[in-house]
Image 1 (cartoon, rainbow, N blue to C red):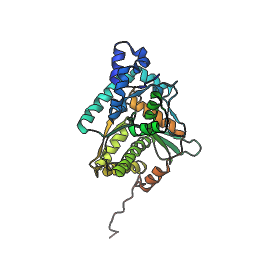
Image 2: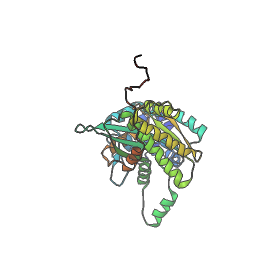
Image 3: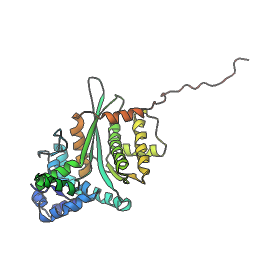
Length: 314
């Protein structure tokens, strides 16, 4: 296999015409190769570009860091993508493109969080995965490599740019945290990085974020409107996320959230999920842990005893 990037419209037309069985061969067509740079330049289109090496559970995956971690979907996710990936991804992309046309997003990502419980001490280990799509060709880097005599095939270049669009970290959490906290953590980690980019470059960040955790998105909305229930552990993240949104607004930036069905064949979700699963075994993120610790709040007691003034016996 050579070119691994293809757009949802191409895959949809192939499946509709009965050519889905030859999908891998058609990906390397000259037309598709010509469209790859165009897709990668757009922050939303590249999010929906697909990579066979990630989607196939029997594939080699894509290396994303110096530790040699490979991102690849598991067998269950692969089966789901083969069954519903084309149509589900196409419609998710359609809705996302409508939002993109209105807001002119400068960056887009799919986020996912996972949580496992240590049976010995009850502590939760969380990992998040972020997929920002295959990154555009860096002409300056390519020229520097050429001057240094480093030759990179189209296949290697594509894999590297796919890996550049994937990121993830792990976090060790107290026993009181729940699954929804992992999803909030994934969103927070991505927004925090966008704020860092904004502060470093001064560029406006208009973010489009895909998440399949409806409860997390509703929690962010409630907190933004000042209607969040007083849950101490969850409130830590729910206050941290609006703080990042406030920081983005300093440069006229903001974030738009789009709910997409989980494990339903939407490719960006699947890549973020595979990334989170891979990073469960990584070292936990101490910087974010310290930042969240500063925001830790205390919940009021479940039962309050209110003292009332009353007159004694006459």
